[in-house]
Length: 424
Image (cartoon, rainbow, N blue to C red):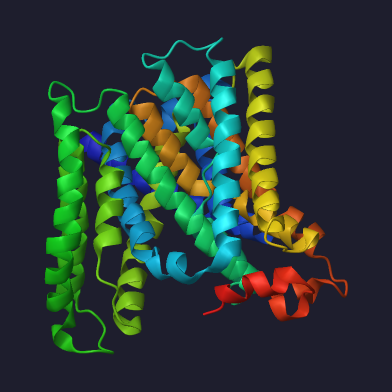
């Protein structure tokens, strides 16, 4: 790497951080999660505008691999945080409403997505047709747990029964999506010359949960309850996440799977240690993730999608929105949740954001989809996330019925009793 390339790389990172900050603030002013502005900025800086002249001038080809390395580091930490924030207790005691919501919001869009994948086979010729069709099903089934949590916090809904149901269902959807994605990558021929290596992921996961987890629990508990983690402790944890990402990459699966697994396997810490670890890790991802948005945006080219591409985008939008909304609504209604509350829950579960972007990136690298289809799905991810806020505002309203959406004790009938188990 020459001195000039080093200078360009550093200047590019500085530019990306600044642009992401401005775009994120603009999105927040418009009532949107900051991530939507950052993703949109990445797309606008890509080859879509001015036939790629902007991206070519700002991000020379010889510098992009180094930007990709920085982006991957941020992605590893992000996926580790996703795993760390996953709460298994939600799945054990979240009640029938959450279970029905998970089934509806996962199976219905997945089934419709498989049909969409079969339709798209008319225009695409993937190397592995079954894996392609199944991946489309996964791509329209994703719900962005981190973005959803931010939306709930911004609207003061994170302490409500509806917020608890949404977070629990989104967490399980994420777990199902990453598990299925790992299987699809294996089905698509991961592992290179040694495809049998993928089979070692299962014993590796057992080592993490049965061996590494208790060792980390003893190591991190030596300071006593209520004591924040030291810089050395955080270094050990982050090194473990990076090492786990390296292991799954060597085994033929994407490194995000390893980072996510390590986050899942982390012992659940006391509040001070947990919050401290999240805060330190999220500070780093705040700086590095915008680089990922730009790198992802450089692969999005909407300038030549044509009429056929617009038709495909329309079908992708219809399937993604209808499948997620209808599945969630039917699942919640089956447990007696009022129609309006079920609609609010369905609107929340339609959020995709960065989680969708990561899943699409994995599919692109694994050869499950090409850059053209990747671009269309990125548009879907942005649009479905942007529409969540206005849709919630319209559904929630300010009428007398709005409080019943937030407290099951105020909702009449079976729906109140069914969701009572989601508290705590």
